[in-house]
Image (tube, rainbow, N blue to C red; front, side, top):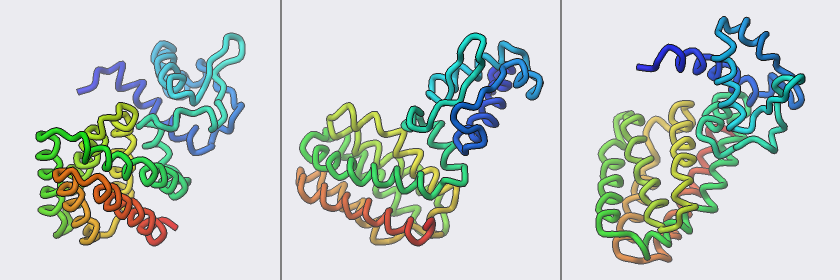
Length: 233
């Protein structure tokens, strides 16, 4: 359970963050902490803590005698999982989903090829377990259970690549996959060929076939983009 202080500043963040990322406060807007503290009925220390979190995401900057100023979108930390979550919850969801899915299509196939070269035996086994978990939950409208294995599968690929920069994108990919499910940008059951492709990627990685692992993963990301054309045009 959250502590009361954390709960209060979390409530402020859950309101201000989505409002900023949705454009309700355009760049250059000045937010007065005293006014915000009154509006949310919290202490100034709670409000300052919330502002510090928003500053860490580069959504705002705080200046003495000026207040808290909303920064331009180009300066936001768009890789922050919470920022991704807020943006996916807003009206700009289709553009955000497409942007993130294009990022996946650029990174994940290369990561899969590297994983085929660098994955340990344990990572190969985990990848196979994740793929089989996806198969087991791919029928019967079990998207939440499917998501758990899907997220884990892609984390293993990124980690097994041996590239620490790719590995750090695990949270980003997790937010994309979670956002698709939570906001119903998915068919009621996952596309069967896509599920099969995940199993085949696991096999290619285990067999050390880098070219096949990369090609199959590219098929997965292309399919994800095609789903967006249908479900979030």
